[in-house]
Image (cartoon, rainbow, N blue to C red):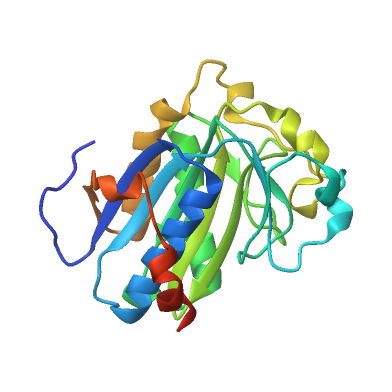
Length: 241
C-alpha cells in the first residue's frame, strides 16, 4: 500500500502500534479527543494495535453477561465510556480506534457505525470471505459467527473507541463472558477460515479499506511520544468538554 508523505485536506494520521496495554491506548484516545475538541482543525487519527488479555464493559453494561466475579478475579477489567456490553480483547485481535471529526464526514452516528462495518466487510472480501451485517445488531458476521465487534463514543462529533476484528486470537477468553450480550450468536475468528492468518498480514488491508470507505489519505506516523504516555497533565483538558 502507498502512503502519502504530505497532508492534503482529508488526511488521517495512521499509527500502527503492535501490542499496547489497554489503559495506555485508552489514555491516548482521551488525549487525542480532548485536543480535537479544543482544536477541530487537527488531523484525524487511526490507531491500529493489539491488546494483552483484557475485558471491557461499555456504559450501562449488564453484569449478567459476565461469568466471573469482577471484584474477586485476577482478570484485567475496565469500565469505559463506549456503548455496548462486555467484550474481550487479546493478542491476535486487531483493534482500530479512529479519532475522527465527523463534521468532516457526516454528523450521523448510524452512518458512522455502518461505515465501520463496511470497512471490515471489505477487508474480509480481500480474502474471498463474505462478511455480513445482521439487522438489529452492530458488528460483522461470517457464516453466522461474529468476527468483529464495534463500540464507539462521540464527544462533540469527535469519535473514539472503534472496532475489534478477531484475526487469530486465543478464543478461550470469550468463554468467560457472553460477548456483547448476544446469547444465541457465537463468536469466531478469521483463523477458522484462514488458519495461518496474522494481524500483521491483515493490517494493510484494514488501512486500505478504511482509506477507501472514509475517502481519506492515510499518513503514516512514527511519533514516539505514544510509547510512554504521561497523560495526567491532560485530564483537565479532557474533562472541560
